[in-house]
Amino acid sequence: MRSGIVSRKTRETEIKIKVTLDGSGQSNIDCELGFFSHMLECLACHGSLNLEASLQGDLHVDPHHLVEDTGIALGEALQKALGNKKGIQRAGFFFFPMDETLAMAAVDLSGRSYFHCDFSPRGEQVGDFPCDLIFDFFGGLSRSLQAAIHLRILYGRSDHHQIEALFKAFARALQAASSLTGKSHLPSTKGVL
Image (cartoon, rainbow, N blue to C red; front, side, top):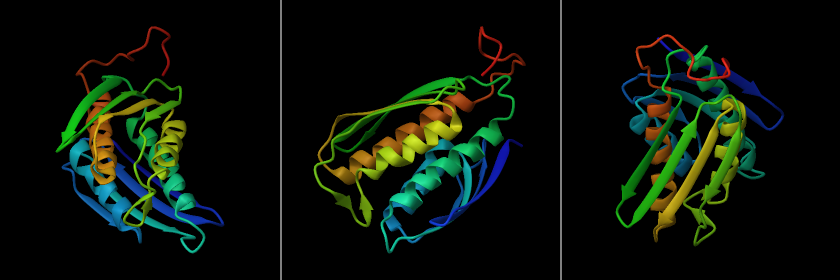
């Protein structure tokens, strides 16, 4: 079973995450940010991950620390779950339609982090979630997972739908990239990932 557990404690946040690849999409998220909890549930469901998360932070200041640190911790947990990466597909992409919105995600578990997101929210917040934190969450995840992550909204109206479609597209792209091919080699001409 490919799984990873991470505990991350700073003066701003206390985060515990357990992720299991090749799961059934079950999640148990303990977080005061309702919309962010919903996005993490979508990530688990559409990525066929089992995800347990206890997320606490200085929300009296701003949600930024909690959201970014969750991305960092989730990336570390996924990195542990991937192990030596032998036999993984390595790269994956997905287009996710959600009503009037179409989102694209591409992931390369290359051992090199790079993050790009083409998303221009219409408003500042969705529920209790500042829209610009999408960049901090996925940026932190990209760095700690050591993966290239490219996200793009091709079109859309609702910020809620656009953010949710990005999470779902990323989940499917990650599932494809982390899937096992049945081979035992490392998918790299360099010999390392």
